[in-house]
View 1 (cartoon, rainbow, N blue to C red):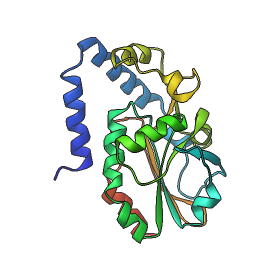
View 2: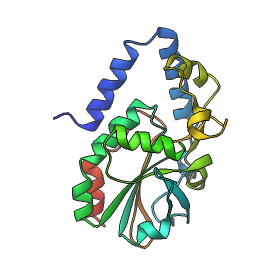
View 3: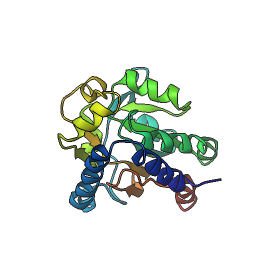
View 4: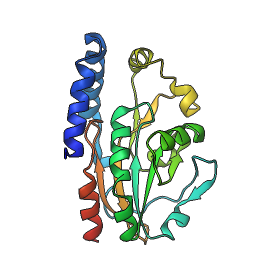
Length: 216
């Protein structure tokens, strides 16, 4: 079976061989510029404490850091939004290891800046059984140093992409999204491992997440 990395690579190829050349070029320009400018040294790292937070889930229920930590270790998966095909692919891959994570005393949580109603769509669309939270305004992502302010050229891409309305989805006009990230936090609230890559087609293999936990 293909790895997540292989699936993501194939998805990129499939997308860029079917969309108009000018749209492909705009996406690739944004991707290269963001990859070059993002300073990962300013992002959360192993040894840092997970900031306190209270954010809503897909049903509008408030979820706190301490509530999640009461259940053991936490794996946070920051994704850009339901409109991102790479994110959906990653979320479905993570869903497959939920039973193994639970057996290891670990809760998986997905987080995006989208409103709870849209988080619900993401959960239903991908048949997720783990919490999907709404980090409105990228508050938590900002504290972790993983916010990306997309350039205005993204609007042209969204217009082509079935008219994606980020304002309606996120509830603001900032165009900001999180840099896709996977973060492991132990039961003391300490960050133990991070995978943060501005190249949004790159994601951590689920098998590596399980390995991280085994090494705690």
